[in-house]
Length: 110
Image (cartoon, rainbow, N blue to C red; front, top):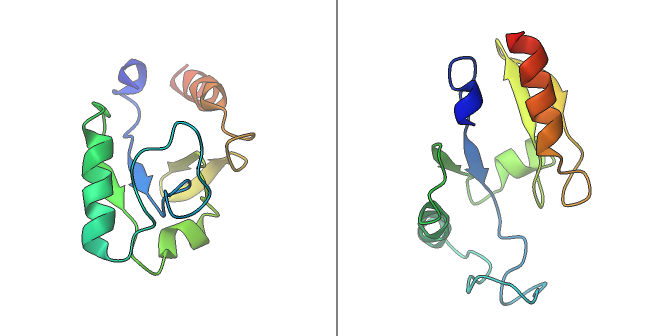
């Protein structure tokens, strides 16, 4: 991200937990149950922030408006330029390719 700080602003939008302890459990799960309130979702986002995420973390509403609008579960990458989506990655984990974002930004910053 720091390579492109002069040409791009980065944010993480924390949506519903992909692998909650009371849902689809994975071997490397964080100890987070599916959020039952905005306070729980905010607390989970704060746990994410402890991993030194180098950009602001925004939090989706409890009706999952952002996740639905951007088909963001479990994760997804987008680039917006002047309010227009110019890159939409495929849903993760299989479609999660940060290198595609890097390539786009390199071409853009030329």
